[in-house]
Image 1 (cartoon, rainbow, N blue to C red):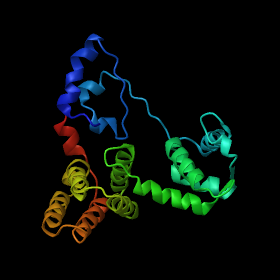
Image 2: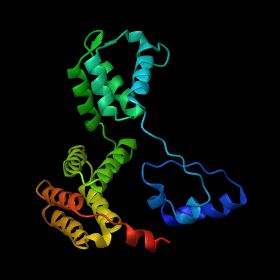
Image 3: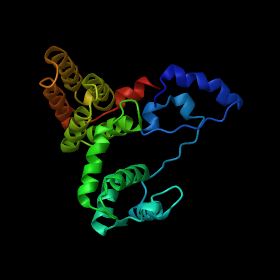
Length: 235
């Protein structure tokens, strides 16, 4: 999804001739982010979140592995701590292992506590990389929350990104895009709200201008959704 339409189109002749085998991954819906011509020539596989049982096995293996894991530290993990890590991971083994590793580094003895996991989660926010994987994880989470009409979750992810140092103008650009693609004619006012949020932020700046982004996020999450214009335009 990081390639624009022109860049995606450049792959087409090589894919058609069989000169290249194209593998791609995305956190977004391929129907929205991949051009139709390329999508019709590929097979889409959905990677579902890992089950709680699978995450438990992965974490236990990481704690036991002395070569590539944390086995040399001989750490103990209580059930409530394990559950906290799994709940945060939300089916993603990378999140679980990253949280486990930071928690292990914070552990004062041979046992990881809930307090150390909480501190680890805070450190993950501070270690947020604007160009890295977590950047795209969070903007994806905001996008999905807006699409699911979850106001509380939308505000949470918006505030979390701002607290981590994300450029508010990047966020508001995503809000404008969401208003155009995912709400569209179901509520034409949504696009104006998003654009007004950008204008307000440009005029006021941080931190006061961030409230305009929050108001826009609330409106977009609450608005009816329709991607009919987006789909029709891309046919």
